[in-house]
Each structure stands twice: as C-alpha cells, then as structure tokens.
Length: 369
Image 1 (cartoon, rainbow, N blue to C red):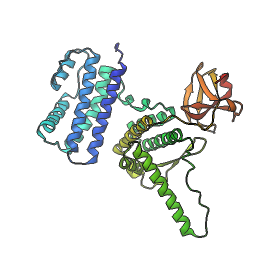
Image 2: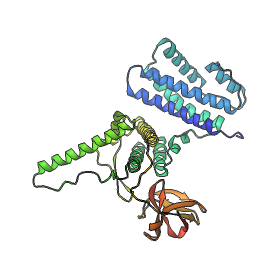
Image 3: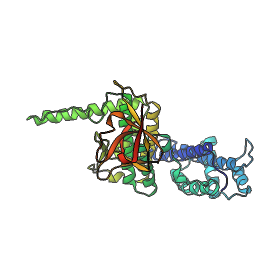
Image 4: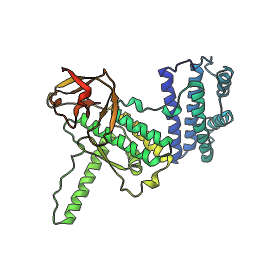
C-alpha cells in the first residue's frame, strides 16, 4: 500500500480500539443498561474505523452520511471490500433501537457482536490501512521504556491466550510506575522501605497486631494516593484481586509473589483484558499528575557517547533485564561521580529518570554537565 497512514489517523484508530475495549469492560460489569451502553461503544468504534479508512483513501463523504452508505462508499472506491457487513448492519440496528427507542439488546447478542468485531477489526484495518490491529496501543504514550516493555508483553500474552503471564506483566508495570511516580513526587519517599520495622517480641499476639496495623496503614496510604490521582479504588481492588504481588529491590530488580492460591482461577481473557486496560489508563493518569522531581542537593552529570550498539540493563546480574538497545552514536546521561564505579564491567547511567547500567567498553565520556 503506497499511502502512509498519518499520525492523526493512527491515533484515531487507537481511540477506536479503546472504545471497543471499553464496551467489553462495560458488558462484564452487569449494571443496568450496560448491554445498551456496550453496543454504543461497539458501533462508535466501528464507525470511527470506517471513517479513518474513508479519509485515508480520499472517499468523499457528506456530513450526514448514513452508516450503511458509509460502507457502500468505501466498497465502491475499489481499494477493498468491507467484511462482516451483515453483522455490522445488525449492530447498527441494535444501536438505533437502544439510543432512539430505549430497547436494550440482550446480553447474548452483545457477546455475539463482540465476537464478530474481534474478527472484523484485524481484517479490515490490515486490508485497507496496512496496520496490525494488535499493535494499536496507548502504551507508547507512557514515555517510560521499562514500563512500556512490560505492558507490551502483557498485551502480547493476552493475544496469545497466556492470561497468567499477561496478568503478571500488567502487575509489574503498574507497580514499577507507581514506585517511580512516588519517587518523583516526593524526593524523600522510598516506597519499598517505608513500612514499620517491628522487632520480634515474645508476645506473638502483639507482634501480629503490629504487622496487621502496618499493612493496614500502608493500604490506606496507597488508597489516598490513588484516589487523589483520580484512580478508582474499586477498580484497583479488582486489579489486585486478579494479579500477583510484586516487590522491588533497591537495585530495581523485581520479585513476583505467586503464593496466592486463587490467581489461576482468575486467569481468563476478560480479567486479563481489564488488568491491561487498568494498568495503561492508570499509569497515564499518574503521568498527567506527575510533579517535577525535587532534590535536596545538586547532582553532577556527564554525557556519554555510545560507540557501538549495546544493551541498557536494569542491574548487572546473571540474566539481566534488558530495557532497550542503545544505538552507536547515541548520547546518554550518567552520574559524573559514578563513572569509575564499575560493577562487573558496567557503569551506572540514567534511563527515564531511573538508574540503569551499560557496558563500560561500549561508551566514552564526552563532557560534564
């Protein structure tokens, strides 16, 4: 396909996909009229995709063009045929009946629409736009590569029906971003070490009480943080119910606690989809409310030039987590005072505001800042 999709049209495709996902989530909530609201989301997502196709291929549309006419005009352009038209017409009729007459569709019909659209979107978007539907995501808007890596894996595992792995990746991403967000909003905050340190006592009841009180206090502190940032506490509790607990070491490495007996019972498509959606949207919400980091002291930095393609990792261990590949000629920033503090042949640098490591022999210092 010779035409290149513009960034604006690509963003509209991402919006259409989010509308579809919102419709799925609404269906699963079971509140009054949710079947009708889901159909509205489904039909809006379809129409948005069709209008992107029409604009991309210069199909002339009147402002009041009807849904069925929109499909015909695209088909008549000669660049492809819109599939699933019978199902799309039924979806539009259900939307009209609910929006204008108040007739709510049956839940089983909504599930059928959902299944049809899961087949429709990948085919039509690839046929007319040359875009892989599975790659449409809000993840790239986060701007924190390590978090983006985990969320991309979560979405990939979801597509592959690997629900437990998807839930794990979503939990790591959300916990990692929260850890980073707290650090940037409070220079004195250390989220992994701010719990009470209770010395073991001969009185086991008192010790257990202190531990319970500490856990309760931490939960309420977290709840205040989430609510103050516009994140639904109910949705967070649902997210935590489906996902494993994640702990981070001071070096940045993580540990997954898989001892929760009920996790596997929650491993299905709908729950994994919800958790991916919650993680992405909550992280973007936290990003919007992020404050500039305030330091109590000045830090000196140096600029380094990458001499050959090399990996940026979280911490030098036997099997380090790769954040990204730095390209030859790229300029990166690190701590001036830590240039000579090598660890297993690596030197400490900055990646998205966090400490990371790169092989000393693959870079040269070019200037101090």
